[in-house]
Image (cartoon, rainbow, N blue to C red; front, side, top):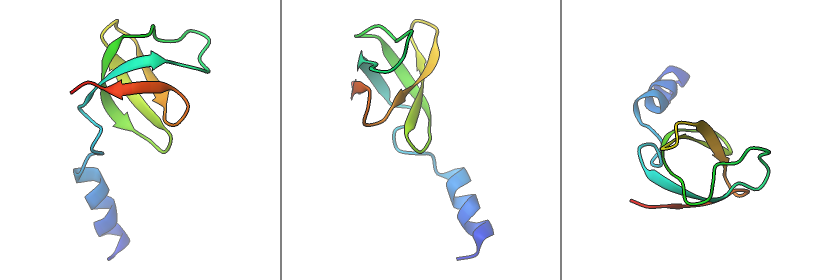
Length: 73
């Protein structure tokens, strides 16, 4: 598959976590963590981070395999 077709595929198909609701259980390495129990919506997923728009107005990512969270939808 040509590289241009592969790039197009990634641009049109979002990660399966995008749009899902997530609840923060504990952010282990953040000096100003999201409080436990806060709900938010995933808007982007990178290599090791899920970026979340939290219901408390903050936009901060969860580190996959470090922070504790659960999907609530």
